[in-house]
Structure formats: structure tokens, C-alpha cells
Image 1: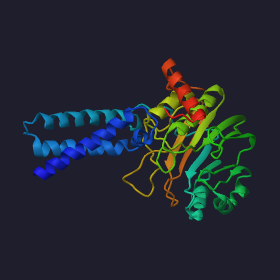
Image 2 (image 1 turned 30 degrees about the vertical axis):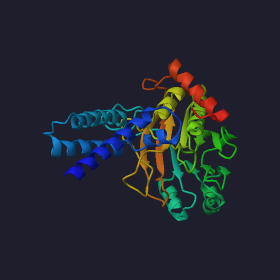
Image 3 (image 1 turned 60 degrees about the horizontal axis):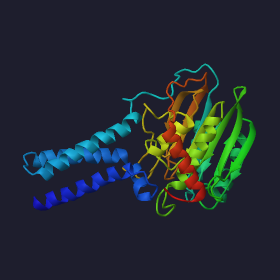
Length: 354
């Protein structure tokens, strides 16, 4: 029992540490990477509380009760963080069950550059039959493998790269304007596309910034800056627009919340579920990395995490209609938020991690 309790002490301290680290708003990966597994930590903390109360509920040690109380506080904190992404919370975008107008259907997929199950992706695309397909992490081999999409999708942008940051964009809808940007890194593209849909223009911002992990980027600075730069662009655009892609950031992180305030876009996950897309290969380590953020012109018809294509990400699809603007649920940035967003953008441009 002594060894068991020492182990419980150590594990409890470690778990509490992983909850506290993301509260430190620094860009170093150690602080940012623990943003991801909030649901997993919620379950682990709840289990630890149950173990402490089951085996040591009669303890007289102040340290033991201090740990139990601290675990309870972290449990409540984690519940507060993930609550907006459950059915218990208010939705951000209204749903339309039976739309009586044309729908805009999109599919986003990080295909994992070294994945060779090309046919599985094609099968998902054919089954879902979206109007727009956005593929990230695509190299020349993937371009060659999906080039048949040009038959059904005559409007396209193809930026294959061998560095895991290639982008492929295919559309059945006419493309009226295209802009390829390298906002932060000369090797990491993002796109802006104006599509003609339902007799109007819909703007799509597509991106795939680097994650804050040691093998990719030790800091979240470049990721945060790119996301926030696109957020400011979206806010300045008055007509219907979407920001889509693998953001390498979870829906509940403070940077995503800052993005929502900066862009004044809305997250259709809120009030509906997590729609976790990563890691497709490890069901215990899943969180939402692939996103659709929508301007207030849209209403949600459906959103689905699709079947595995042998990538480490699941594809995710969405169906929308355009309606009149409804800004009642949008977040807005105060002066402190605006200053932080500008500070992060400047840090990314100048390569000076915060």
C-alpha cells in the first residue's frame, strides 16, 4: 500500500502539472502541447479523485486532502473548458434541419503525406460528393493519385510540397479569385479563394500552420500568428466567408478563443460535440484539430467526421446554407485581446517567441 500511495502521489502531481501548464501563456511547446488532451485529462482527474476517495477517504494527512481538493478544482476547470463542446452548452450556429435552398458542401482532410491509401480518400469524396475538397499535407505523389478529381472538380488550386505542407483545393463551383500566401514561412502556403455560390461570392481561407511539437516547431508563435492574421482578414471581409483546414490547434485553446474574438467567426462545434479528427490511429488520444469557422451568414445543415482513410486524421465534412447575418452568438475582442493578437502576429513575423 505504501508503494501504491507514493505512485498515486507522483501521478497526481504530474496530472495537476499538465493541467496548470497551459494556463501559462507562453509559446514554448511544453506549455502549448498540453492544450490538446483536455478531455483525456478530465477523465484521468476524475478517476484519480475516485481512487483517492475509495482508498484514502479516512486519511488525516493534510497533504492527502490538499491533493484531493486540488484535483477537484482541476476537474471543475477542465469541465468548464470542455463544456462548450458538449450538448449541455449553447450552440453557436443555428441548425437547419430541412433546407429549402441550395447547400454548400465541403470536405477537409489531412491525408498524411506518407499514407498511400489513395483509393480510400477517393471513395470518401465520391460518397460525400462535396462541392469543395481541401486536402492538406499533400506532395506530388498525392497530386498524381487524386488528379482524377479534376474531372468532377474543374476548378482547382494545386500546391504540392514535399515538406508535409502542400495544399490541394478542388471545387465544382467557379473560382472567381485566388490568392496564394506565405504569411509567416516561405515554405508554408495558405490560400484565399472566392467562389461563386447561390448567386453570390463566398470567400474561403484555407491553411495548415505548423504544430508546437519538438520535431516540427518548438514554439506556437508561427502557428498563432498565421491563424490570427487570417482571423483579422476574415473580420475585415463583410461577405460570407469560412476559415478551414488543419489548424494544429484544438477548439478549446486560448489561442482559438482569441481567434474567434479577432475574426468574429463562429465555431459550429460549440454546443454539439468535439468532432475529434486526430489521432485517427489512437482512439485514446483524440481531439479536434481540423476546423470550419464560419461567418454569421451561414446556418448549419450537418457536420460529420468521416471514415478513416488510413491517415492520422479523419476527414471532416460540413453542409451549410447562406441566410441573413445573425451575430447574436459571436465573440468580440476587447482592447486587451486586440493588443495580444497584434503582439502575437508581430512575434510571428519577427520570429520572436513570446
